[in-house]
Structure formats: C-alpha cells, structure tokens
Image (tube, rainbow, N blue to C red; front, side):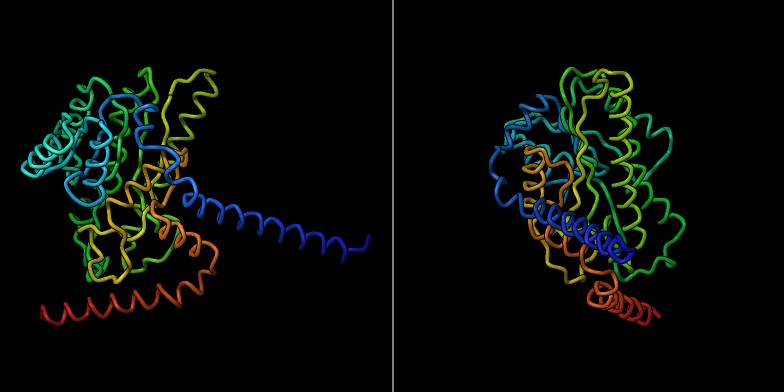
Length: 326
C-alpha cells in the first residue's frame, strides 16, 4: 500500500471523527426538544432528598429564579446574600407564595476576609440537611468601562464575588455533604463565554466564568477519584454546570444588544436538564444552539461577524463617556 493511500485513510478517518463529534454535539443540543418535559421537576426531590436548597445571590436575576423555582418544587431554601432587607422581603414572598420555610444567611461575597468566611462556614454547618447548592452569585463591570480603568479594589471585589465565592461555598459544604445518607447536587453557574472567546470587552468576567467551569469539573473529578480509590461512595454528590447565554438580569451588558432569555425560563430549563441527567447545560435551546455554532464556526469568522463589531461599539461608548466626563 502506497504512502498516498495511507494519507487518504488518515484524511478519511480524521473527517469521520470530526463528523462524529459534530453529530454528537448536534444531538446533545436538540435532545432537550424531545425529552424536556419527560420528567417532572419533583424528580429532584426524589433524587436529592428533602434538605435545604442553598442559593447564593438570590435576590435578583438567575439567583431569584432558582430561589423561586426550588421553593415551588417544595424545597426549603437557604438564601445567602448581602442585603438583609431584600433577603427578608424575598423570604416573606416565598413563605406566602410557596408555603415553605426559607432561611437567611447574611454574607457579603465581595468581602473575602478569613473571619467572614469562617462565619459563613459556621452558619452553613448549622443546617441539618442539604440537598442542593446553587453557586450563583457573580458580578461584572459595565461594557463602557475598560479593564485598565478598574481600581485595585475593583479587581479584588470582582475576583472575590466571582471566584472566591465558589471556593468558599465548596469549602463550607463538602465535608457536610460527605456524611449525608442521600445524594446531593451542586449547580455551578458559569456562562456560555466560558467555552468561547467572544467578549473582548470584558475579559475579567470571561476569565472568572472560565475558572468557575474549570474548578467545577476538577472538584467533580476529585470526588469521583476518591470514590474510586476507596471503593466506596464517599462523596454521593452530583455536580452540574449551568452555562447560560444572555439572560434578562441586572448583571451588566445593558447595552450589548444581545437577545435575552428570561431568567425564569433559563433556570427551569437548567433544572429540567439536571432532572434528566444532563449535568452540563446552557439552559434554553437558543443558548444551546448558539453555543454549538460558536464551537463549530471558525474563530476568525466569529471575530469578524460578532466580536470585533461588538468591541468597536463598546470602545466608542467608553470614549464618549470619557469625553463627557472631561
């Protein structure tokens, strides 16, 4: 057999692998259209017990949608946030609307002192039983601000709320989840940008969301490895990653012009996916489809069609603001 024939076979094999990967990604994208209502969300209580569902950053946007949806299912939610008044108002609304018994833990994730993290861990350890943990809290700066305009305090606060919050929550709950008799679930809220370099104007947010995804995958791998080594289910914990696209929240990008899905629908779709055993999800179909396109279309084309145009608009907005300030 000549060298050319070997090369031909290599090309055919490479093409077959590429088509197979594309077919699998396409199948995983359209699959929710067929099974999305196959399991009721009550399945989450069957799978993960009747303990508390902890939600960080629960007073608006995606966090609020998680708090309401999990309460509607019947979980007693534990609301962790920094605004006591808004937490109290949300607690009253949940008690009235869903007849459950929410708890409040006041904690400012912008502040990362060891003393406050110890208090957070101590408060969580007082909970009798934990079924679900939603690591949702996050922040980003406006498109109109450039990275170099951020102060040292800004950098620390954004890293604290987007990255240290996830680390501190896992550090607080893992030892407790380890000894529970039922399976537990942790949902890490990342972003569609964690897989795609499309946000040249907000590199800090993209970087921290990529960290959320990476850490989530690694902590899951660590637990699976320990279970394998010990030959016993030491950690009976499912870890899911929620990577939504643009959602109707008050979290930055107010002038991006991107089509947005409602937070309620995005969260419901995420929970339906998890109930059906899909632990990495973009939520609504439009975000899954967008993620698929961003993965298969060459980056050079995405940059020309979307990223460059968007970043140019952001630069113009920033320059106009600076000019007005002067």
